[in-house]
Length: 291
Image (cartoon, rainbow, N blue to C red):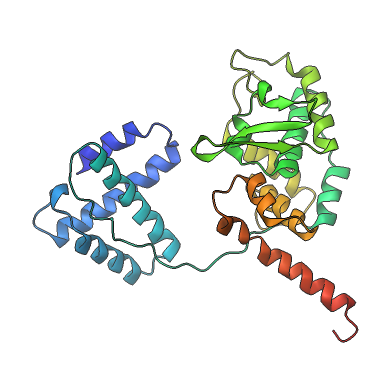
């Protein structure tokens, strides 16, 4: 079973090292359980009953539904690969459902704090300074994901139309308009971009001209956000959540926000309505004569 999973990880070249490690740990846990659960350890003999028993054991060990669902997703993905490669004929995970989880409301930065962030943002007048400011402008101004930001290329920027072309999940393209500040920051950045430009034409580069990587973006975002605002988390996704929440609070159409975020279904976008409802409650309590 483990050999088949190693082949699967090699096949899935798109996976990050962190994801590969996570998948490996999940599979090792399942293999260990299955060895104790059944005398027959062949991957062809794993059935839905043994997988459900594993899920029950994980629950009894007080693992959160969200963590259990991640492990289910790992095993489900693995068996889909086995089906594709004709290792097995029947998928034992086909009727395995994910556990229900409490819906978490995304954290976001208040409008006044965002204004303070950009008004008081101080960066060096060098390449890294312009790049770091542009990173913040694009994450908040367009709501793009970290991976989408990293993979932006020069040809994806249309300064005439003031828009960017983004390649999202499942290689779906979408067009996102640029507000004036983001547009000006891109122009400022491009004026010194050529000193770092490499052959791949990626927009975001390191000081050595290499393609930017996720951990560096995390550090940049945390550095600037932690010095100006108070939050439990300082990750790039916080700016994406803030982008969506502010649009909703200003009366933005939910379907339009869905398209801007690159969500495949409206359900993923509706989580932001919880924050919008809280804003409505604040308005009601401060404005209604009987509140």
